[in-house]
Length: 168
Ligand code: GNR
Ligand code: NI
Image 1 (cartoon, rainbow, N blue to C red):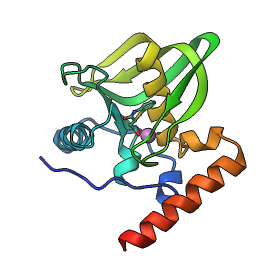
Image 2 (cartoon, helix red, strand yellow; image 1 turned 135 degrees about the vertical axis):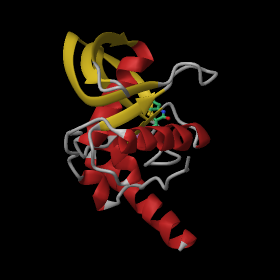
Image 3 (tube, rainbow, N blue to C red; image 1 turned 60 degrees about the vertical axis):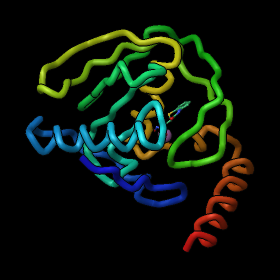
Image 4 (cartoon, rainbow, N blue to C red; image 1 turned 180 degrees about the horizontal axis):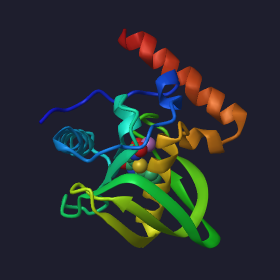
């Protein structure tokens, strides 16, 4: 197992659109294990492969308090089943230190492959629905800051760039 480096905004690699996973094999399962280890260590409630510079359509989530509900979604396809929007203060491991309100559909259905390559469908609401949509955005090269005003996004970008220069 390995803890992987998480890319941070405004790294252009976070804008890559991920490709479908062709086959769920041993290498895929190693990546899944590394994503969980990286997510739990951060700590976070979700992590998309894009964030560790692997441009495959794969994400992991665990919204439990005690690491008891690891969920894997490979090649996820989401459909909105309730257009009603809910607001939530979102954060992102790729935008460390910033939380801003984002509106998203409250209830979605998702069809995906699990770590054995089997297809499943489930309905999600609450934080799980928010997190899943946030992670699928990563696979499409999108970040929660894209929902903010250009002024807010630019302010966050400048501060993170300064922080990255300080670290370098
Ligand atoms: O850990 C995370 N917390 C979070 C809080 C509100 C909305 C979304 C998230 S996902 C985030 C981890 C992350 O960046 N996943 O891509
Ligand atoms: Ni994120």
